[in-house]
Length: 181
Image (cartoon, rainbow, N blue to C red; front, side, top):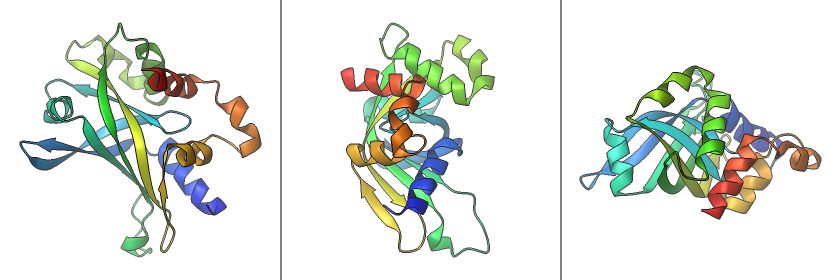
C-alpha cells in the first residue's frame, strides 16, 4: 500500500470520531451515526450505544454490521475521491462481567473522555465489532480491500518499527481480548 494511503487509513481510524453504522432492520438496511474507537490493529471497533436505539436492537438480532468512516468533505475535491473506510464485521454486546469489558471501556474512554457519565446509565451497552474485511478508498484510483492481517499491519500506530511498542495500550488489549472471545 502506498505510504500516503496508510496515512489516510490511520487518520480515518484515529482522528474521525463518528462512523455510519449499517444494520438490518425488518429486512431493510438501516444507517445511523455512532461514535467509535478502534483498537490499535483496527480489527476491533468499540461503540457505546443505548438499548433505546433501533440500531442496538438491530445488531442484537442480526450481528453482521458495516461501519463507514469518511474524511471531511472538501468541495475542491472530486466527490468520488473523498477518502473513506468501510469496515465489515460481527457485533457483540460486551457485558460488564465479560473479560473484554474493561479494555473496551478504557479504549472508548481514551477517545471519548466526556462520555464517562454515560457508563452510569443502565440502558447504555458496549459493543465490540470484530472486523473481518475493510475497504479503503484513499483517493481517486487508490482503493484497497484489506483482511484482518493487512488491516493490522497498516493501521498500527507509528512506523512498522514502532508497531510492537505502540501495541501496549488499551487498543492492543481490546484486540487481544476480542480474539480470545
